[in-house]
Length: 316
Length: 298
Image 1 (tube, rainbow over the protein chains, first blue to last red):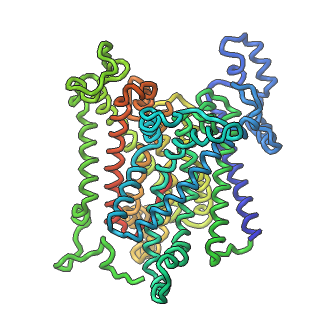
Image 2: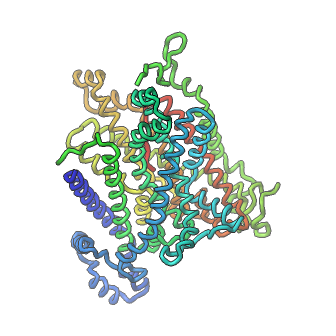
Image 3: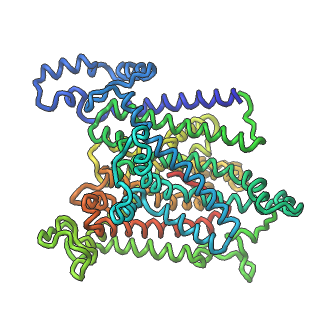
């Protein structure tokens, strides 16, 4: 087990390194250089040249990469050009806000998706099943930003129940935080839960047809115990995989949802960084996004072993 | 699990005992018919949009700005008095075109790549799949934005980028089919006959690998339309005066409270499109690839 985790962590590090290479190469091609961005277009060439030399922009690309990557290894992601602040604390502050949205949405997605999936499987081909299918279909058929806008219009604009945009720190005002979370979380959950419910439904249907479920029923166990103790636990394995994949979609969705609801999170920061071509900020956010996704996948694998003792990862 | 060949929808023998052609099976499914008709209607609208519009899509009617739907402007007007109905129709072109082009790009890259590494196997296969895993381990919107940040945004670039982002998914599915097909007797026979690798790959393996690739591509089409719309919404897609639904919705945001119709109609158009494509894809999957489980990854 320890060997497995160690191997996966090593793999994550390699993946992050490759991503750092890709990001660095792409940002190298970005038009305009940092010196021009700091000073503005119309500075005298001598001053520009001096700053370029000071920042090492005339060094060969591999030297620049080593300098940047060396910094990253020591936890120094450089400074944002536009905001003139170190990147890491900035990212950290934004990450906490996005993580709040992400975790609440993922938990809700998992819970609602699994419940709907089980209901649809148990009521196979009856009204509840079809109802769940239609709701799921609606969820996947529309991009997050459209649901977000519709929700804003209905709940907040029409009835004026909830704030439509912005953010309040959890520590300062927990109630306000929750109010601000409702719409973004609802938007993300609605678009993601379809994947979970459809998969849970089909694997639950498979499991319900197995011999051991029939045996459990034949022994006269109460239906509730058959469903939740025997069937669901086995049906959940594929669901966990899809939840791990959903985490990737969730991060893409957060970029959009944060733009819609004006939440100052990591996604919003990334859009801002790209619009402003703030290279250190782009590099830092990408690495952070990739790292969180890799860790989520690792967590899913570990949860697997916990739920299914049959899975043993061979030591390396 | 008890299952016979007849349980698999694609293999139901007809009364005469012969296997019915796939397209007949497909047409018997309501999902395929409804989805197919929707998609066809949209394609027709996209092609004939310039003749179907009531006004040029970028014509200002300043006096008539922000009007609700009425007999003159069926879907209302926007903040410049442009006709929303005409804009939605014109937007259909770009939205569909970006989606289709992106799917074409991802198949053009993904299919040959998957065939090749699946056929060659060994270290190349291992290495390529690991590399693709890394690319796929990335939210597609984020990856797309990163590539788009290099250049000035345009609809063509969005299509190509979305295609690149989704190519690994096609490559992966093609590879897995190739792995099983290359061990089939007809493929082995071709090798024993001393056929060239090119012939075996394109003459024997590819024609038999299509069904799952098409199913995957139909999934990619819906994802591509959605991601492209999101990119447009964030300003990384179509640029004015061109328009697609994502951009229309983005432009309409400041006027949402007072004039919701400006965003609502392009949103509904997108719902309809993705709904149709999803239905069609689901139906096709049942017919072409009955045992396929969940595949995907936006």
